[in-house]
Image 1 (tube, rainbow, N blue to C red):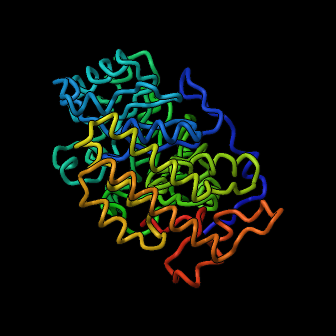
Image 2: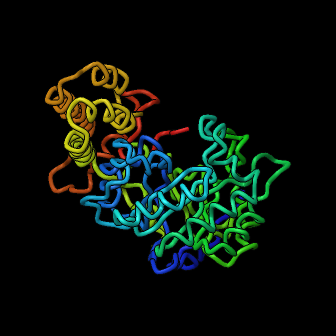
Length: 378
């Protein structure tokens, strides 16, 4: 473990990805089934240097698969959204990149990092780290196909005996890739153990383009330590945003100022959940939107009192209006109990929801978290 240097906030500077400048390189990772347009819009509303789409299969993109096209929609997105592509055929990847740029993508990201068997068994994702010649062909084809910046996301290597990320990063740089993100695990680790941020420094030392550290960044301290250990130019955050679309903004503020910003109050979180639900219903339609919303509602409620009962009720309800009512009632009960445990004294505006909740933990039990204290995600 590395101790964070006192000057870490001043060391994190804007980066250039070709023609695109990120003032604060704190990036939302691409996550299948999570970083859809409603979630990206919500994260952008709070603030993010860059957000990534869900991973898009290139063949499906070219076939104009309806579900795939929906994943790349960028309507009403206020920030910079990169579209991530996966595939194994250089010509197909190049054509998919052109189609996405025609639809407005300002950055194309190439996936050499996905460890999932259904991707790897098709020789895509992390499997491409085992074939550097094919990997280089894909990188060159995509870079030559579009005029926007192309970036790359990968892992340390296939396994501990084959950690070729430094060599592949240099190949990528020579092909015209403008930024590389490294998840601090090998493919064979999947998501087990702890990401090794220190090994990312090997990639940073191998190239001149920006390098982004990724993996196990769940709080401000993790972000600071990941930067210190890796020497990276920024961080990419994935699972740490589950139920916390405001988390990237907190990390950005902390890296700017060294001061930890509070999470939204319980009342504010209730409004965020309700707005997110409405966005998903509008985007997908009631039937699909409600089912996709269930996992997000579960993440928002995790660690709060009676969350298991709440999730069970939401997961079996097919009426959107009733789910809205459940959300309102769930948060209202917690807010009222917090006020009852520690009523705000007259003239004491500092008695926030989170402060009152923290004083109620004994009555709720050890699983209770105050608003603003991130639950364990992994």
